[in-house]
Image (tube, rainbow, N blue to C red):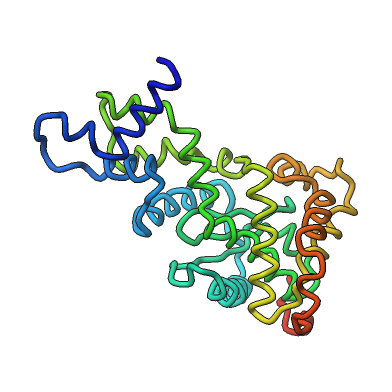
Length: 273
């Protein structure tokens, strides 16, 4: 099928015109509704959350949370405060530190954010944690993961709507999000990563933290050998830290010079034993 024909079909599906040309059928099933919402880019918060629930569940099936309730409470307090500065403060935000020595962080639609223990140990203060969480919050509020899913499912979802049997919603979401290993290795485009860095800096500054804490984290990671196995997944899923640092420097310029100096809160930072 030619690309132009697929585009026409997609437009018909999203507008509902194709449905109007078919005989009346029973009420649309949840799986149908979710696929249509993903195709149109207009997912409700509840639909976004259902996708995020599945992603988070699969992710935590591959790697567990660090067994330290005090650490998890602390990260949720910091992350919740940073998320309140965003344009989606009402999402049911959840944050966690996962038991992996990799140096990385992940997020999922609907308000899920995870930091690896390996990255957490590299952080020196609360402002740096806020910057890292702000970056992942940026992915969620800009719906970067959903956009990747929408693009990757373009042809297959059109085929589903053209008559193939739809699975139930749980199976459908599983097909969309993949397993835990796939979730951890999923790559967003460079523009999304750069945008999330800018958002992370802004949100941290709004929350009263040192806005330059995130660039400091990138600078620190950039000093680690790129042959270090703990960075393998980070380099696979993100632009090089040095490139991100340079892009931030160019994007920010002197725009934050008038912003009051933020706090680092070194003493309040929860340190792992």
